[in-house]
Image 1 (cartoon, rainbow, N blue to C red):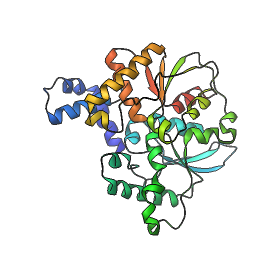
Image 2: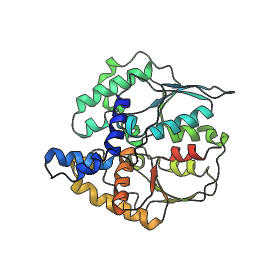
Image 3: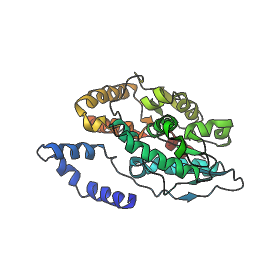
Length: 302
């Protein structure tokens, strides 16, 4: 399915259909499709995410599972491949599980808690049977909901898998754990980057400091926090699609803060936030890259 969607999105953008869609007269289904179309990365770049990437010799610490999510599986392969590049260099094999599915966050946010529980059970069972030493996520939105699985499934202890799942850890936390990232070398980059702190990272996981600590490994990098990081960017899971009249003004404030910072790169750990903000940047006519911190780390790794 991801390969089919990748081909479909490439064709949609390169054929010029995306520009035609924006010119169609407004209606309920058309307006929704326009919003979705405007959020697609431009240009859309897809990379193959292997099911099993082997650790690079001479060290092999074991295998980890990379949680790829649902939207990110198609729209954020760049972050997944960057994550794999860093981990295999550190001596970890990386596996993606065919049995894993959406984390359930969007369903829970839309009020479908039973569906979210079902997805959580599927993921927990897949993690438990993996034999991996850890499950790693690179999207804070997914991570925030994964961290709430125990609470979500608290009344279903009888259905718990026989083997407990491995720990579920933020990729940045894993890289910084026990100085692992210190084993890597990074090429300097004389560029200003602005860090967006997603609500999921800041308010749920409470781990936004990880971003700055990890980025400090890149020499010469000028790291600034995006102004008013305590305020939501408006993405709000699916709010940017379902309530654009609320989401867009919040986004525009963030985009103006980004322009005022004079940063050349925007870094965010949440895919939907990054897509939402990148759309706002494009509407200003400016060209500012938006990426996950691990993508920049992998890019600068020597």
